[in-house]
Image (cartoon, rainbow, N blue to C red; front, side, top):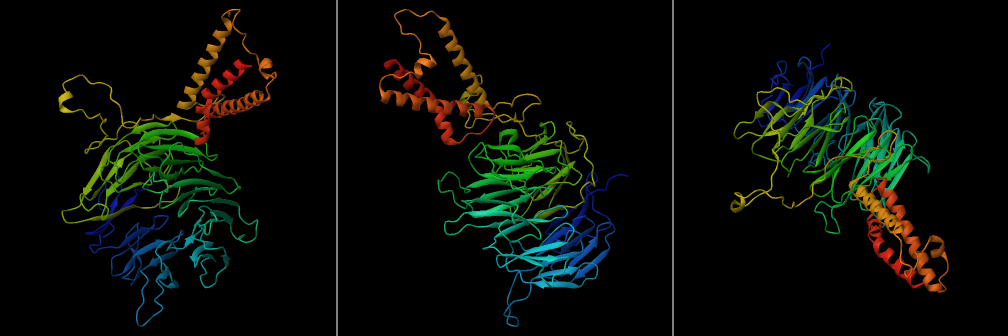
Length: 580
């Protein structure tokens, strides 16, 4: 049986429509396009239902045949979402007060999709975290109310089954997957106390030992929390609005790891600068981080927070895994030129390098073979449109809005996990009438007066770092980094020089080289002995740091400074030993 063809919802100033996915990319015949301006569109988690609000009512239709399931008279609705099993439709409209109702109307409403009946109306003034969060089987539902979490069970919203009382819960994230459900909770720091994130397993929410894991940290005005698909770990990106050192316009970011087994860690990044994006692999065993001042680095880490593969540096600020997890796209959108690097994750080999200039949106098609890039308003109000690509770099379909019109959103139809099998990665560009848009190789600028002369190597503003496998080979030592190899060569050269010196006969007039046993002997001056002992201690610590660096461990700034002092310490040691 052939896999289904995903639909693509298109919302703009010309109305709402559904397109068949690649290869046809034509209007979906069973859905009649709505020419009225739509405020929001969404698919149910399993992709069987589609809903939109056109400023007059909210409609829910079946994707298979376009038949209407429900229609609600809610003209002010601004946001929509389905519960995981598609049994409840959640609608939100801006909170407002009137003379008739000084308290305001309940602006968050939960509807039974099949019957069309209102289940519960709630107050939700802020748009942040507006939608309740369900577990995948809808056995529990969580809302943040007045800085505490309210838990409902089995979609019974008339009684609160449980509460999590903590000081000012600012954000939370419910784990994916089945039971038991877990929740990650963030509490911002105050009065000199650190911020912290804790993991709980429902329904054990109280008591000193209730938390599965706890991680506290300073420098956090806000956080972003991401569970992996298997609900075994959470990545927390902590951000500050202002970088007090003045090094970054984007503030400061740190990345923290919390496992449900209680393990926590600060993810060590090899380059200073902002953290642009963090993405879990669908396999849940690895994650990719894009970070550092431009040109940014991208590194894949395992669950021990050890680097597995370093993609080097490049113009990128986002990472997107395919739904099957076999392909990774590193892209540079926004203020970058739209370059996309497509990588085979299993072989860590680059597949293609297309370019989508002015793109403001990127998303994978559920089939893991195609992607869509779009230029949408209000981010960019000119050249609005979208392209559907094959991951090998071929453009299969392109659509541009008419003059004076705008594109606001494109969204793929959702599908349950496993609907599309993983296919072997192809390296040859898929056939297309629109061709490919591979990024041309960049060359250094040369003034007109020098263009008739032979090209000479020029100094670059940034030294580009090539991709590097950080994973240890089977039955061997770890692959050394660039700096570790350099240090290893230095040590080997120094060792060879010492051996040459020992093999050469020395003149009788010169003092004999000092052996370890002689150097450890007392010089007769307690002050000199003390200095020699301290120098030996420092040199031993430097040797240990070198060994750690050789195994691929990232050293701190103060540790690197210690390494730079080795020659100075050796010189001091030599002078002291000569004076003995």
